[in-house]
Amino acid sequence: MSNKPIKMHRVELAGVFKDIAASIEAGDSFEGSITYSCIDNIFSVDVDLEELTGDEFFVGGMYRVGNSMGQGGVNFLWEQTN
Image 1 (spheres, rainbow, N blue to C red):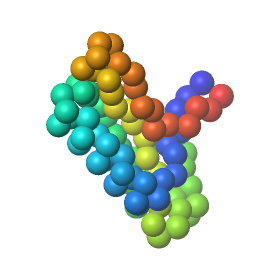
Image 2 (cartoon, one colour):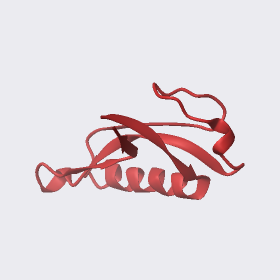
Image 3 (cartoon, rainbow, N blue to C red):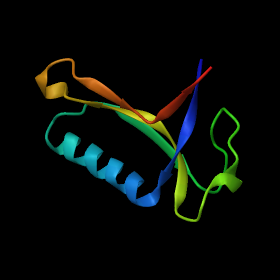
Image 4 (cartoon, helix red, strand yellow):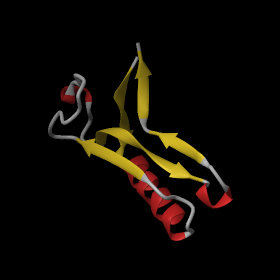
């Protein structure tokens, strides 16, 4: 099984960054990583940049949430493929 980046509209991507920032400010996220691109394939799997509209990005990554309550959880920004 491998991870494939997901397509995300720019407004949705901005919302992810706002959620990450809010979690960090609240002391609720201790780690994460996100990669996004609309101009180059910077991922380890093939993606077709021609699939994207002018307002979309390919996005991959993860960020932790709920750390202030213990172990917490993870938000994944990948599509699971076989």
